[in-house]
Image 1: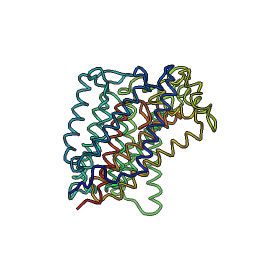
Image 2 (image 1 turned 60 degrees about the vertical axis):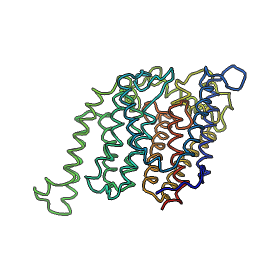
Image 3 (image 1 turned 120 degrees about the vertical axis):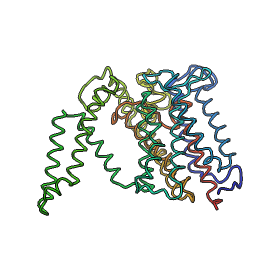
Image 4 (image 1 turned 180 degrees about the vertical axis):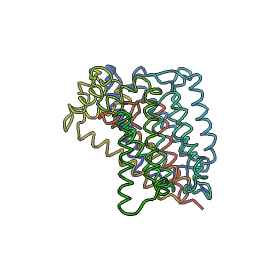
Length: 425
């Protein structure tokens, strides 16, 4: 049971400091990107810098509400929060507004809300609730279904929008499950599926199937050198069944690529694999992103001095490509500081999660750390041309109210739980 000793508690100062740095420095880069020709240092609600200030103010209000709340409420309200986020995701499919090819926004009184951002928080809370129940053991199948459904049901609804970028984030919950006892071979299966997926997209189906068949024969041959294999043993050999599973997965990936992905998504995958070269079309974003980052050099061109920034060469520069502004105006040094801040925040959350006395707080901490990690890796990888362009914001840094509010709530709910860990009976 939780007891509340004060409204503020003992918040982790390092986490709060890193949060403030990312939010404030993010706003500075948004302001540099929009470069409004106004008086009043950005107080203009008609541009993104001004609106982001409003979002930051509302985030401060959310923080205050969280800090004033009894920590017992977060676990009690988990199911209602989760169900509300699912209802919002369903509402998007029925009455959502299409933006950028994705039907992922709700218009509420002239204001746009993206439910998928809040669904991440709902899933993290729900997984923590399910996994913290007495007797749950992920080494056994019967305990895996409910947590898995809790995490991946929102992912399925988001894929229907279709918002691939937001959906991918939910794969981070596999790290949470692994921490809580899921056998490691599931992680290896996931990594193997990624390798097979790349091979299936990069080469013809016949080539991939032949490679897998040769791998099966090689594994059986090496085992044959150590012991005499009978047909009965061969038919039960893991290499045979994993190989057949890989073949089925390779064919499935090709089918999904050809029938499910949108044309622009196919082009992005092909660009990443080097199968097409269109620097003036689909590859324009990545090409301009690399130019902007590379032009900054070691120290950068100086705040508000970025030419790529001022001339709007990079699309979505306040959201998905905000890191380009950092690279151009602050250079390698500024980029390194931002990367270090994100790594420090994620690492700190993991450290705090491990010291929790209650399973709910620990699991929730790992959940938000995993979400932040996937967002961070995919966004930075996207700006550097290492992953396909799938449209995913940089937490606390990119422009956007839904993203900032959701991540602020996620972080400070955990910090509030951590501040009261000593009052656990």
